[in-house]
Length: 285
Image (cartoon, rainbow, N blue to C red):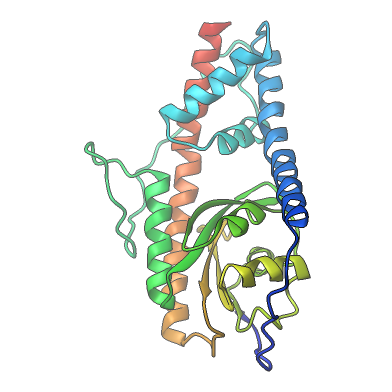
């Protein structure tokens, strides 16, 4: 079931005078938090690679991660998360995934991402096209895409949102946001008025309002097995009266299309990247 948070009286807070030191402290705290959330997975993956392939130091492990990330156009955090979570190759095995079956990418029926000269479609292109589609359906020019990585939602794409917003929501590891609510309930969540909706904690509310968003709608990206792959949220400059059934159904179609594609990408392109990492690490060792 989709959820809505109703609108009350227009109580947009008056902008307050913010001291430069307070703003700088917030920025420093955000930077520290984001580093704390981003670095552990990469550091842990380096340690696993160093130990698994008996490398002399951590730096070669990082170079292997970075090179593979660039080669397969996969975010470093995503690749590191896969190294941590996916069982490693058998001892001395020349391949990580022997006998792995490959399937063709599912059709992208509801979105039209740009293709490279070789006809390939990257994950970034798919997520960018999906964001544009959601914004077209909901009638706004502000929004973002987050990918599910472990217990986190990581910001991957955004449009029309300011730097304080993208810094604050670079990682979402708490439950007091509409995107987290959509991720937990596996259903679309409509916030008709950010200023009064109880779903937000006060700091999240402040950052969203400061970015010019008075309403938002979050759509979970679910694959064919109902597994959460990410969330797309649209942001609106005025309170919403709600979305129509036609809009909700169109968003559901986009969710299913992108969720299936992300699932395929994870079990195909991401595993290709891990296989390459394994081969390169064996050569390095």
